[in-house]
Image 1 (tube, rainbow, N blue to C red):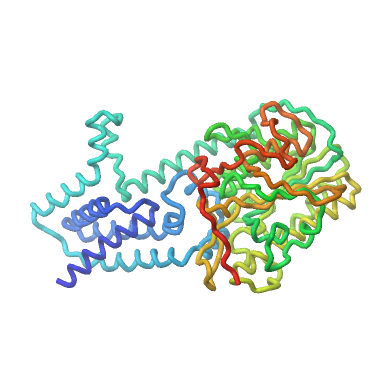
Image 2 (image 1 turned 180 degrees about the vertical axis):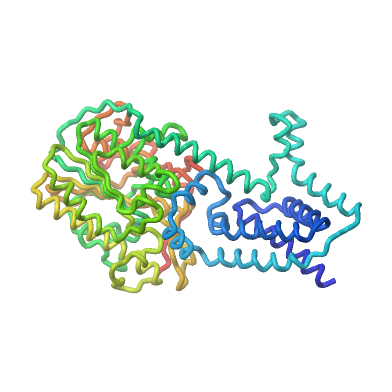
Length: 512
């Protein structure tokens, strides 16, 4: 009797955690449906039952780290997996909340308990099991078909049961990503639609530095008080954007929406910042410490390849990059070229989750946890890099200006413990509250823009910075003055949907 109880409870708990690991909302009716299916298979063959358990256990263990934290395998979740290399995967796993490991451990334990199930051999028992499975799994889709709300008889089998839906969603997302990547691949050969006019700004060299995963509230220049980790920026004259919010909470979604034209839910990658600068007569450079390729060229990498010169420190998934300082020789060469107006884009790896593995020296001060201490130090390293770039630009006697912003922020995991860490997300304000700073060789004072600016308006803002006028861009606001601009409080979530920034909760630090 005890064995039956343990086995039955184990199966139901296994399926409950499995559905959460796949990223779907818990629904008891689907747990009941899946339990009926598994027990029905067991009534015919224990080997088949064990095979099913094994397949779903492995699927849950593999995808659970993503599903528990970010949801079911939609285009963005699958795309992130495709564009992530082995090193980034290990960094991501190391930064998971402790609860994730508890869920996955439970999945393994409950699967072991479910192996104790005994088969139901009688014919009427099998009929009952299959009937329960079919009605609970396909009732909703069958009702829609009968009522004419769906097209074709095949739609009856589009069940919401996670055991079915997980593989269907994964396949459909993969197919969509392949289509998108084929479309992206044509961007290099597709003409843009720019017709820019260039005005004189007093500068001939524009340096755009894109940071990685930096929360504004961890920078001394923006109010962080526990460690002076931005000595150069804090003392530098320039323009500080106190309420800049990134376009999205992940690199690809954020930068494609910030540096290319968004039309509805579709980003037109051919109309991007680099193409605009090319059309305006700038000599363009893209120097990156991030990967150009996943299984396919990443959308960000594709934009970079539109530059007249591009260099990726780690072009392929199998390549391992290094500290951002390794970009300096390429930046120096770009600065040294005696040409007309130049746009030099520098894409850092910077403060990507698990920065301890990329530090070339130990952190200076222990704050909160080892991971947080490394994160604070990584920001200091970025500040030093910005200082070095400015110094090199000055040595070339160029009329230079430099803008720095981060692609997105992060949210806390295991907050207030010795394992406190930071990871990607789209559910908190701090996922989007990032630094944005513009300076120049002739900057005379520190000025602050307190009104909101959105990464979704980054392209018109940067075009104004570069002295480029383009009718396709929003020119109704003076982006570089402290004036209110309309529509600056929207962000793109991981489902590629616009969301109000004000609706998000705070994720304030809990540090000593």
